[in-house]
Length: 135
Image (cartoon, rainbow, N blue to C red):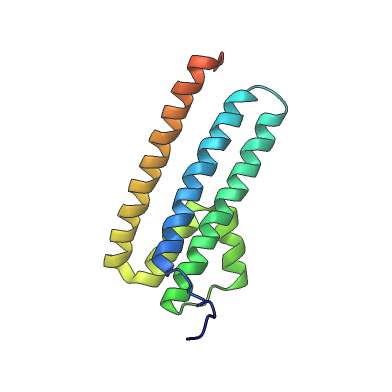
């Protein structure tokens, strides 16, 4: 029997799920640092960095999805995904899935965004217990 390791690649759905989980984790950490450095010179830097990283996560998700669907992501569209984030994702979903399946996928995106928002609200509440937060 040969003892070579098998080179198993995770499925696209698994990778996309992991990207969503990483996005939640990153968003939570970013929210914590935004609260920690509120009303300082670092706050806009943290917000800009967060937007860019979230855009890169969205691009990564689109790249994995496009490989599953044999859809070529043009270079300019990759840039637009990072720049416009969720808005470009919505366009991508309708373009790759058609109207009805794109609408279903858009519903999933709304659920994920709602979950992300609720997680950030919880983090903000927990942080307010330990830090003085001035709005």
